[in-house]
Image (tube, rainbow, N blue to C red; front, side, top):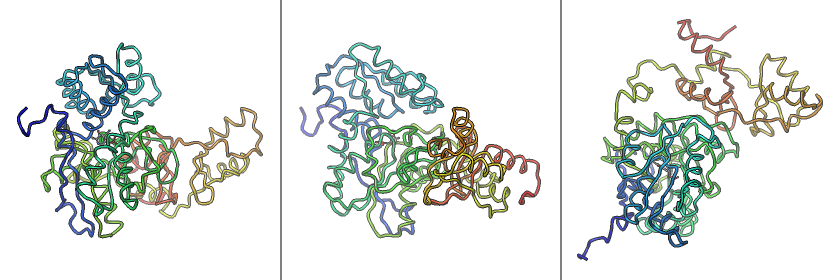
Length: 467
Ligand code: PMP
């Protein structure tokens, strides 16, 4: 073989450069660097994961020539297809329907069979892409279900390759590692390696508004997930590949922040990256602004821009979704909605889990409301709704029973700054939205509140407190 050549393309996975950000970080005390995982052969960090999953499966006895099945948002599929080409497998990929057409076409171009499934169903639903992938793998002979959400060889790939590589490049000067959270493979595997070398390294996860991770990492609460546009990060269930205990901090970003930052990374820094990279950098900048510390932050840039040309880089798509600045007057924020409803100084009534059914019924009647957040010692426990009380009474509970067993999680959390445009998605998926200012509940929004706010605006009435 010629000197300097690689024996095949899988040998070119990894050794991605680390680059300093110069413009989008202006005014920050911290220095932010990025690791260009989008420069891997198939365009993402998943090349490392696919290589390790296949190598380990073969070490355990998998014979080349069978079929690889995977539930994938695109990148893992492309990476597995590269491995399949080299090692001689067929591929069947199952994708949720929110993914860009480019991703579907790319996987088909790679010779894979692609099955598209609805996004808007529960993960346990037989139509979900997780369930369909599992079914196909059970029905296909000589099949390897890569299962990136539950395969320990996913985080192990990052422990073996990404972690050591970053340590080699940065050494102990690295203070914070930032990654968007999908399967959690990147942050869990890379983070484990880096913490073994330097226990003081902080791991910062970035999570989109609508995903479960943020509330769970902050408060151990499982809230109602709702849909969002950024691809590849955030989850509506907890994969076993994520080590939530290793993550030191989590930052939440909305679609608009992610996509505007993605465009800035391309146009100001020359980094041709996709939406989850914009999300990760937007999260890192938020963190750096809040901490004000002079430190070295490294952000993982997962994949490239070419898969998102028809979305993030298409002004019409950005405008239709309300993500461009010149979109005209906005519908306002949740803060405006609360102000219209209660004059801005509305105290949020709550219950505690030791309250009796009777006490809660009396409170609901007194205030003419249908549900109360349940708070114990200043900590949000969940929600009690009149339908929960009804169910309990019908099933034979007496009115002096406590509500502890009836508390439910059918709510989402938003902040006063959340755009009203976004509330449509939130209220599609959750019964109510609790408005949180840090740990404090400052409001509760139901569907009728949203309708009332929008109807008042459309009607052109002057916004002001209702009588
Ligand atoms: N960004 C993109 C574009 C992805 O496809 C993924 C993986 N779903 C991630 C980020 C998150 O990486 P991980 O699964 O390692 O948490």
